Image 1: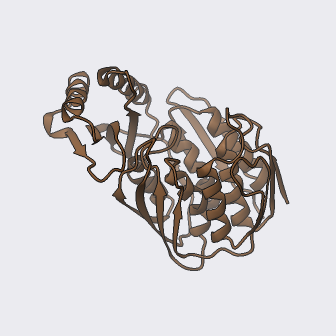
Image 2: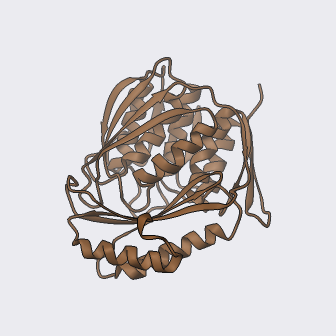
Image 3: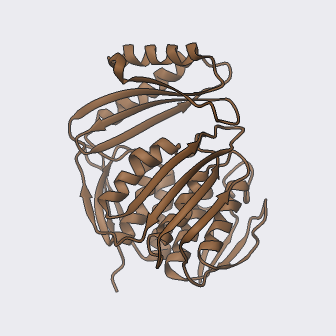
Length: 340
């Protein structure tokens, strides 16, 4: 049985999601205590509960402690099943994080899966749909995974109500070495706007264009008329020789969009100062797929406490070796799966 203290390391929901994914992949029962003990509101919030119930459905698992606010969970999977499923968070909690909980197992399912996921698609503290679609899914494809996403409705914090689909084909993953970003080929400034005056987005695009010398054709204002609630997402999409990275900030009450754009540009410039192809958030998302693939090496622009905690969980539960080697071009992450 896997036993974990959910308050160790950064003490957030990633420990739970990774542990559930490992339990599904190995068939080992899981007992986790002090869930999200490092957060202001410990225990299962709506998105964590939805991820748990989604994992239970995919793995035909028996579960104890699956209720809002629970700080302890027992999870006993039986067998992985694909097929068509719908998972709804019911709040603006991230639907994308629910997907990431069950995706590793569904790549090993005996049949393909089509998921409909509802909740937040664009909210702080979680990867927006655009990052999943433009960054995470292509990175998985480097490992051999066949995943296709499709957005049908934007869902911004705090209203939520977004929806997207995920088509997952069972795939054999293979190791990869991804150490160079290469030349920057294109920079796009994108504003997703729901129930916000268009001049706000136009000001943001003008500011981004001026700071990064982005031509008019690469400044995109995209209205989101079907979003249940208001929202504003400001994004930079950087296309380099080896792939795409997306940086996002969200509108904040009382903060001018020009201030947000300066913050966003600062993040992009830090990333571009190194030749690392993998951003901070993608590094976290790729650790488990790399273990599943048998290993690999990636170079990342920054290693967060979130990523280090995730690595510790994978080391403990799957016996993987994950090393972070600081180098001038960025940290090199070396992943070796347990043999035998």
